[in-house]
Length: 260
Image 1 (cartoon, rainbow, N blue to C red):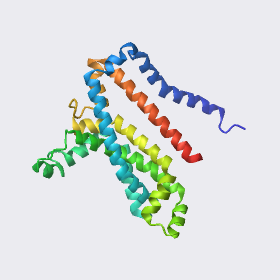
Image 2 (cartoon, rainbow, N blue to C red; image 1 turned 135 degrees about the horizontal axis):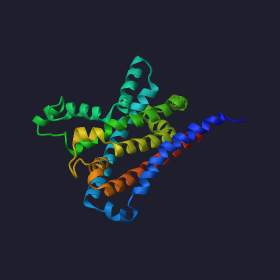
Image 3 (cartoon, helix red, strand yellow; image 1 turned 120 degrees about the vertical axis):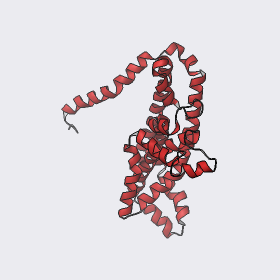
Image 4 (cartoon, rainbow, N blue to C red; image 1 turned 90 degrees about the horizontal axis):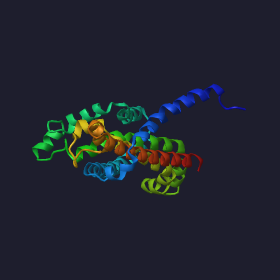
């Protein structure tokens, strides 16, 4: 017996085409013969290096903040948890430029927090720190939402047993909770990294576009789209390949967690 009506194949095929055809079209325009030389240019290497460093740091920040956040949300009850959960998901639906503007008026030179820091000689806006903050702001929800769902699904029965046997809450977290949520944690981390790597609007608004300082791969591609389309396509290919690998790994880890 079919699990779905046959007509579903038509929109399914159309949806796949909508997603795949633009990517295939881009691949036909990539200058494959010049690809190594284009990726070895100074502009490419600066953008690649900056993106890699900032994404690794922002992903580390997301892990440090996001794992405890997901645990608290998954194991707490009350009206405040709904409000906190809503707040966590807001950056996922905000236009990136709005996120960047919110960061700018908070941490910029004249911002709520940035002004006192600027008086102390500490500048955040339009620096590499601003890039990391923007990436962390937009990618944190991806880890929290992914991990919280897995923790809620696990139910906490094993944690309760471990607690009844005398294990402290911290020991239960490290020895029981975290290993059980390992696939979801790895999947959420991969998605957070991918989101950081692709961040554009918030970074441009809050950090600007300074080569070697704030100009990440998406910003470099945006600037090159008209002046050097071949280099823009080469860098776009890098992002597509990385995104496919990361999403593929995240999907496999999620499936492993659900069936393992």
